[in-house]
Length: 86
Image 1 (cartoon, rainbow, N blue to C red):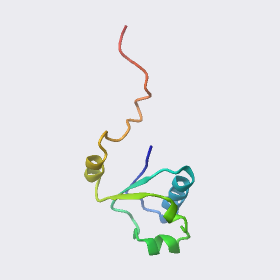
Image 2: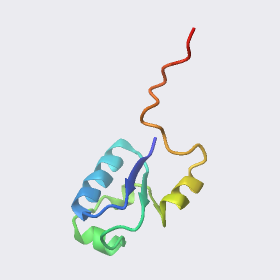
Image 3: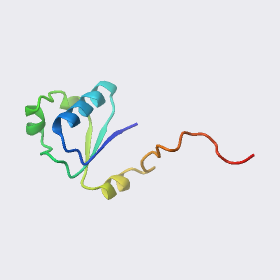
């Protein structure tokens, strides 16, 4: 399981997501462009001192994210139920 942020605009919200990911041991895919500077210095200044505990994977676009995700993103409509007629 990964957490994906699509073109995040608010660094504080991204920070909360990074903190959640650090607590849960999940990687975060950031799909750019972001509405703020995605550098360690800027993120640490925003109080995100746990960045060394989260794996942040940056993608330059949605297409780059899809190319880097072999199985593709999960379909939220697919709940695993079999809808074929019997």
